[in-house]
Image (cartoon, rainbow, N blue to C red; front, side, top):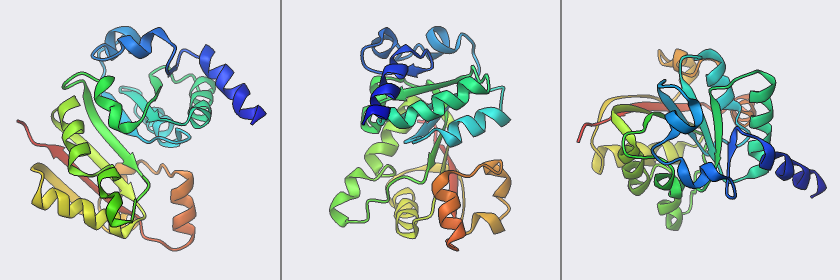
Length: 220
């Protein structure tokens, strides 16, 4: 608990973490380019970024883009924030928020690309509305994503992957959908830039195939 309190205190002083109590928390919607990044580069958002491994990893190989990791756990964001600072990745920011509140912090069409990596699969049928690829979430992502913006998704969960494909087929209109049930043996391998999260390393070591899909949000 003491370590968490220390991290929370440090988070409060860090410019690359936007959280309750900071002025930008209430002002950032629609203003990420002007108030935070101070540039016009495309914005990639990682949903449920955890320790920020993927956010920071992508920023390291795509310096021409801006990156925002979103998670509700402040102690996790502290780790990603620390790595970004140590590596001098000034085009990285972290937002402390629940994912279902995302439209409170991003204006319509403000995001160019979403990444969703290894979310909680919520396997119980009654938890379907909490899955981050549920139609209500996808509709929100589409609202704040630019027309034809990308959504990219990695998971070890076969049930969540199949659920997501079913949602896209039956309830959601997308373009340029591509997917694989074994990323490391597919032509889509290059998409992830060789970046593995902690959970990805764990599951691949156990012999679990990594599922991956990507699509463009269809223009309204």
